[in-house]
Length: 390
Ligand SMILES: Cc1cc2nc3c(=O)[nH]c(=O)nc-3n(C[C@H](O)[C@H](O)[C@H](O)COP(=O)(O)O)c2cc1C
Image 1 (spheres, protein in one colour):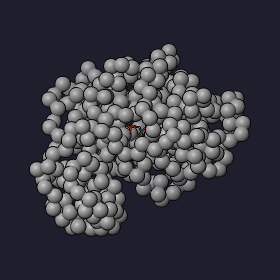
Image 2 (image 1 turned 135 degrees about the vertical axis):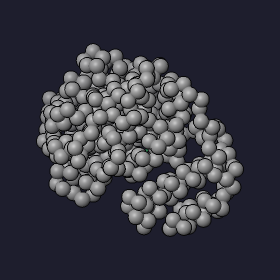
Image 3 (image 1 turned 90 degrees about the horizontal axis):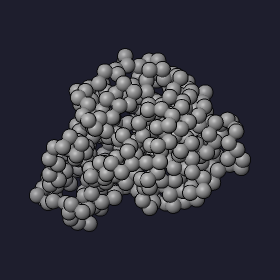
Image 4 (image 1 turned 180 degrees about the vertical axis):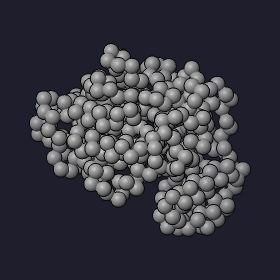
């Protein structure tokens, strides 16, 4: 498939608030956060049916791609009409990351590569992987450079956290290094790895990163963390000067959040919150998209967690919530949703409330000597295990 950097209709007419990432001009400055186990091609399609933005894949392991791993290449699947095709890669070795990017780009498989440097999972940071990589600045820079060089005209972006913990903050130096290496954007989840998903995202750090990156290149900075309502997105941009936002958990069971974001950025009236009947229609559509992609046997068990999110806040009762976690076929899913009162409405306070994991904090351990700033040695085996998070 040839690369398709030509913008789609939703990306052409860049509004004043538009966001440029390499050749792509997005009319709404919004990126769907990569979320392992969530942002597969069906979920990305569902979200983009509601609004504009950039929709990033689940995280894919660079080593898995280089070694021809079936699972990794399956995760790197895009809809035929998806444009731009945006992939998130995870890797800890510059050679491996460069080779993965080269393969993706040479056969025109992707139009954008995002690099994940935010994973807080102990099983990778303990070996020097994930969020521990930016704490070894020369290695971090070498990985980013390898990706940018291999990507040629395809834009490369990075996504990271503030650092390991409050005593080991890395985001300003990493942001400058990434900008110097030629990335097309820098995204910050404004928490440390120690925080995981707990507490509040510290948006002030996004503002500091804007200043730090501005001194090096014109790469836009994207703010991420705790955007639960469209007004949060505009406020984060207004208060920090960042050029766009990355939204994750707020979309779980709420893909129409993209319509709310669209309205906020284009000045249109916000769409009314959906009643339960509309929510059930979206959930059924989601289930069908997932079934078309991976078959009913695998899609319906995956839909259970999504159904839990779709029903968040609706007074549907314990029995329905119990049945959701055992639903096994599309017919059962249809029947369950059909049994609900379609006129129910969500409490607006619940609709825009935090959802998804809030786990943490958890201390971060890195290998002895890891903070030796001069070292470019990639971490040992285990650091690039396939894990999720960022
Ligand atoms: C289930 C789940 C999976 C995630 N997987 C990834 C991932 O693979 N790569 C990544 O960079 N971030 C990952 N994240 C982090 C999100 O991209 C995002 O940075 C984080 O959720 C904060 O944004 P939010 O407050 O809008 O959710 C994940 C988050 C969740 C909840």
